[in-house]
Length: 113
Length: 113
DNA sequence: GATATATTCAACCACATGGTTGAACAACAA
DNA sequence: TTGTTGTTCAACCATGTGGTTGAATATATC
Image (cartoon, rainbow over all chains, first blue to last red; front, side, top):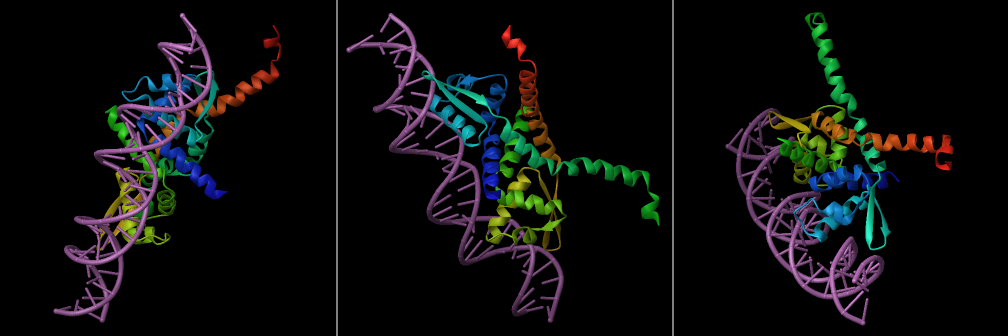
């Protein structure tokens, strides 16, 4: 199951590694969007945009419900939470750094002797 | 400059989208590592592992200093902070959801009239 | 039924990616 | 000097990716 988590993280980070897909997520953050609405802002064929949506679905970031002939997408933020959790492990590195720096500056006598 | 930020995010998320590279970051979280030390845990040629390190460098996640004939790598957490910041925009979606659910459950009279 | 709309699918292309191998190079050790 | 170690580089291969186009499908409209 750890491997499954890893594969999911692969898909999520891969999905986020493309500016078109990140923009689509931004759009979805404002509400539900059809595939056409998601595709519209980009100078790209419909089918091309559709592939990006599929990448987002593969990562579990987008869920789709078919409503008549239009496919309505909505954001599923859960995988983003997982990604954030993964990053959380490293949070101490970008906050601790300041602590260390401050400690060095306020206790110069340690290195002196 | 916004585009530069986007390209940097591309590189960071792309770097994180591979389990080998994530494992390398974990290793680097424990301290400095040579390329050989980073490569050792994986059933993969030296040159292959070296390519992964280069991907991490491209993302700014790893900085390298040459010490004699060994190349010493250390983690640079700053780009991870940027990625975390990007994810932060969506944090409300995975926390607000619970709030909304709770509100609906505790105030059923709203939909009643 | 005929037509327009929203979308997928399959085929294709150029290019990037992750991997290999073997040669090259730089530095320490004998 | 000779050899060994740590590493890069170049070439290559298979596969994946992002993009296109044109045809197919399903649904709404006339």
